[in-house]
Length: 511
Image 1 (tube, rainbow, N blue to C red):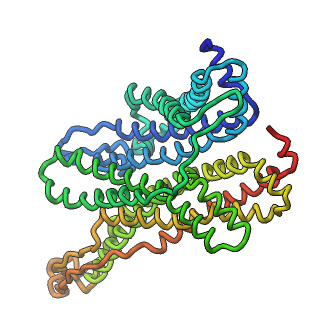
Image 2 (image 1 turned 180 degrees about the vertical axis):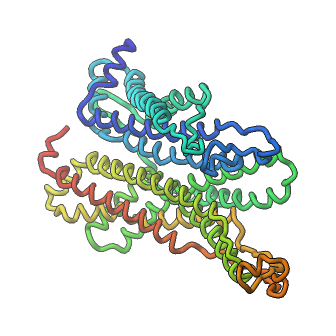
Image 3 (image 1 turned 90 degrees about the vertical axis):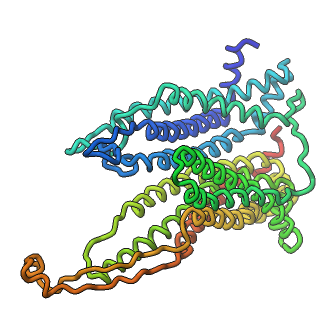
């Protein structure tokens, strides 16, 4: 098969195939913007130390996250983490319209195409869609860079529009994402056999998932717990600290995230077992059967949402630490009679982090909607057969709700708990306020500023040393959990709109 023919067949299909290509390209565009933004932050040069700038700050920006070299690495890492829900959305979009695509591939096999050609066709479809998205994303990035380059009156910039990532970084993002998407598609197709009679997959194992995800979760918690001891032990070794601490952070976060996502499969299976054992209604029993038959569906569906909640729980723990420290400093200032405020930098920085997490949850909600709708459409013949045998549509609607909510609630609690543990592993469990002496002048400003009269109005105050435990941010975690649960409920509502159309008796005649 010639490459031009292969490309033409990859871009052919129905409106569902067109929607899949467009959504995959859109996901690749968003991932490209996040990746290029991260590499742009990394590309900011650090100036040489001078007498006026001993801290080597990049003073052409007015955002401290870009000014201080020590904060730019974390900012870039947070931008890269935004790619996770976007890539998960791309994975969900790639499954859209899978039954119709399977029939099209079987028709190609019937026309004489080999299994290898059919596999290359699917891989090329994903790769071309992703490449289209990354190229458009590069264009949007370059255009936005010019439009947003607006220095203020002091000549400072809000965004690093004066720097550009290296050519290798640009090529790596624009070309690397389509390659990764194509390889991931090829990996997912390793268990798929396309024949002229249809597409078949290897049967799933009958026993449920094991609790091995707990090992990954424990490894992630241990990695984060080691960060502070490592910092104290090797504080003088700059070269070792430059790679060891980021490695512990990245490996621990990745292990914990994979553990929570895999653990959702275990939760789904055992939620199905509990429903089958204790439920009495037909809707719950139908959901139990689906959860036990495909427990990994929950891991695939909720992966992006759970990743966002893990980071949200960690950010909530960090905010609790900074908030407690800020409150303690304010109390000590008021005790000493001082009117100076505290530095709001860390708390204002956490506002940016919370905004990024909100965006990630919003993107993950889109992935949830695509996954649930795709699952309903893929099983429309089975649903139509149930309706034809007398099962009410209301029962099927409740079954879909059970199937989504039963694993979602414990998975959300697990992700928030995991994120909170990781965040508290980075920060100290107690905040200390240093004591000391403070001089207070109890007179007017004129008398206090006059050296001849200030001494008689001065009073020395002893500021006690205070230690306060950092509380668990239950309110913040509750808001995160409520937002995630609302996202799941919105997803169920959208899915039920498609359920009625998918249970029409005409679906029994589809092939």
